[in-house]
Image (cartoon, rainbow, N blue to C red; front, side, top):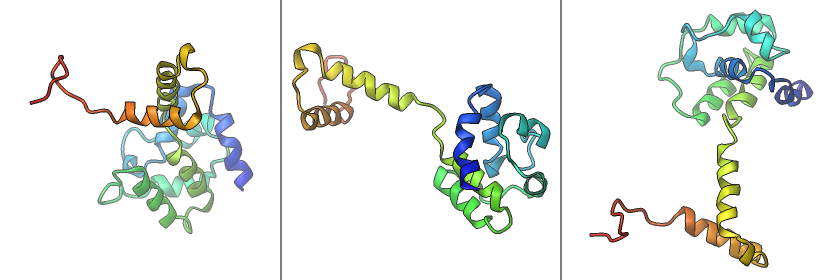
Length: 148
């Protein structure tokens, strides 16, 4: 079963917009809403979803209180593991998956600003510390950089 889950990421690359909508169906707060996809539509984007588990899942009422974080969604799926053994594994895989790679792109951009051609011999520790200082620098609304 884990090999099925491991291969899902590669199979969900095409049609990213609809695939993201399919991935969102694993968020329990969408239960009983119009955004929930049908089984046939879901399988176009995410293969290997067992139909019997999917039908039982979408019939559930929305949880109360609604999960408000990734950790809460993962905990909800872990609690449902006995009822949905395959679906819960697939769901946890997608719920934990980052929605975009923006944070990675920002990190590379930041490193490019810090490690310029004049600083190519900078050590990894120094680069890491400078990046932490840059990310955690104090912010101010004053354009002159002066604080009250």
